[in-house]
Length: 423
Image (cartoon, rainbow, N blue to C red; front, side):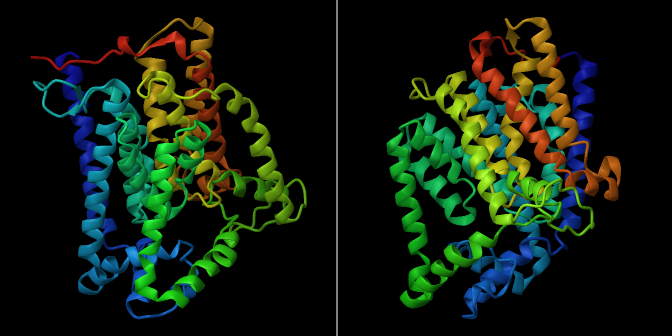
């Protein structure tokens, strides 16, 4: 990295910092999804029905977890949101740091005389810019997903270090809060990593016993029965902000209305039939990948393993029944890894194949990032989301990663081009 490149990288990093600081100050005054967290905690604190608020689609443990947030909101709604957003940014920074350590076994550093990968390096800076949309989306909606991403990456890091108890506790915590990280359990179960599965199940049990003394036995059972039988099964939304695979199928295959009154369905199936069809498509589409990845993990930190972890991160926002755009922050690891392999690592792939993969990578970026209202305006962005533009973009990225997984031996991560700052 020459002096000019280093200065430009610092300017870009400074601009990102200014944007995030502006968002931090502005979004701390917004209600966002955080209002749902506060309401859930308030209902616990005042002994009210936690599911009287339709926003609350979370397990009962989440409502108990939210009690301190509700108490902080009563003291100062701006202050508690400000602290929450600062914590989100700190969690995102450490998610970046965990990623460089996981993929390249090098720490993330700021100072140019420290050993590691500088945050100014395009290896980190380019994926960070690409995911800035989802960082800002999480901040604007005051959501929990950057914490979830950090915990998930930390859990994978503990797993690679064979610290199965810590990995299981973190995955169990995230499942108990938002459920969607349950795909890690499915993955580890499939890979026959029973130690981490066992610790995860124990953690889920322990965390979900915490509400028992809070609610009392009868109310505790009633809430979990209500969540399992009524709340969770009806957590399917077809409005354009839900970019999950399930929502895409519902919009395309059933006459489900959205707030834009834009009907994009080409069939008129019943929603229940669409759900069953979606499950069937997912199961059929999983057969070949299941065959490819059938073997147990031999080297937990090898590129083969890391590509598999990355695929799980890609699947989470796609297969979660409700997947608001902010959930796609989980594409951080997939975009980082794919960019690094296609642009910063030596490969023996045919040149035409390499170019084709790069083209697909940018098609995915165009769909998931440049479809935002910042670039297209609110109306056109919303229309494209009715057509599931983010979902399709994430699927394209998934296919690129799967192709890389099939030919992972053609990439040599030891050749990654890490730029060093000028003296």
